[in-house]
Length: 247
Image (cartoon, rainbow, N blue to C red; front, side, top):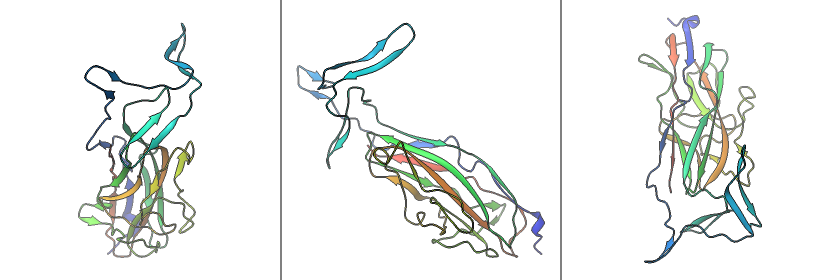
């Protein structure tokens, strides 16, 4: 017999704060060189200083730069600018780490959100995967949605997307490009990019960029539904994310 009041879901570490940074095939372009000379940086402009300091402050300065930013072809890419950093990297930050949903009901859908942001530099792109099993209570597992589906109270469901939704309530948000879409290019993967449709498949890619990108802020929207036959107990879900990038 199912006892509704004994059913709890607690989202512990919704996104693990310490994430795995996997950087396969890390390659840094060689400087122009010959048997006698090597050029580390080429500068076109009026001048600049990488370490201009007073007793209290230090700054990087440049005067009369002709162009800044990224330029690339199918085989090469370059980052123009006097203050350009030559070291490739990928970073991911988590804004909120845990949510307690309390007691679930067969009459309504429980929802939760979490946010993370990703940026990459001198990269061919990145992808973010969610790798954790669905919410569980010992051997009982909340049924994940294997294809994009609407939330239906009374049916056992677990799913997510990364866009703004109006059903079952207004919650979530579309990706936010920081500082703007002129510098950041993160996107939501298919199956997770449709408003009001949710799914969950472990080891699937939920977000990506196909080039170097400034910061993109993503919001994950989760839904939880139970049925009259869902076993009671405390359910937990630890959503581990893995960000990878190729250089």
